[in-house]
Image 1 (cartoon, protein in one colour):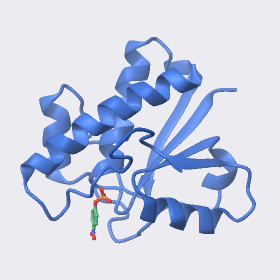
Image 2 (cartoon, rainbow, N blue to C red):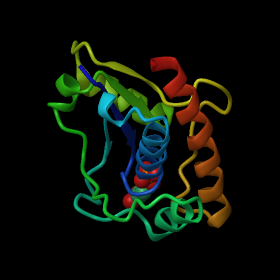
Image 3 (cartoon, rainbow, N blue to C red):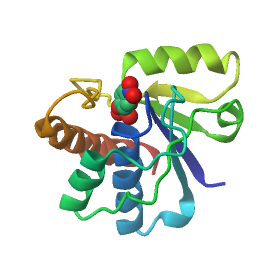
Length: 149
Ligand code: 4NP
């Protein structure tokens, strides 16, 4: 059985698309693509069907990763059955996910397990926020990959 990982933020247009893209790139570089199912979603539905925020596409591209084909979607009930691990970008999204999951056995945890623990929402800030997201997501992805292989 492959590992299945769902990255979750609020809108699924800024943070979790970058996480999906970076983690997929790491897994591919490691030759482990067949062992993982990777997706991302948002706890909110406002951006359903939208591509990632242009600032997220740009920061990922700057680091050699193309996330432009991704489309936003809201977390669905089946996600709590289908994904072994759901990784939340911050505590607000973690709480929403835990509430929605009920007693399902999915592992739901914060994506980062070292300070600052949360990947801050860059939506209303400047471009530095997106570079910060990228750096946090890269180290978080490396840590998570080491923890599961
Ligand atoms: P994300 O950022 O959760 O990292 O995708 C946001 C995107 C959109 C909104 C909030 C956060 N919004 O309120 O529309």
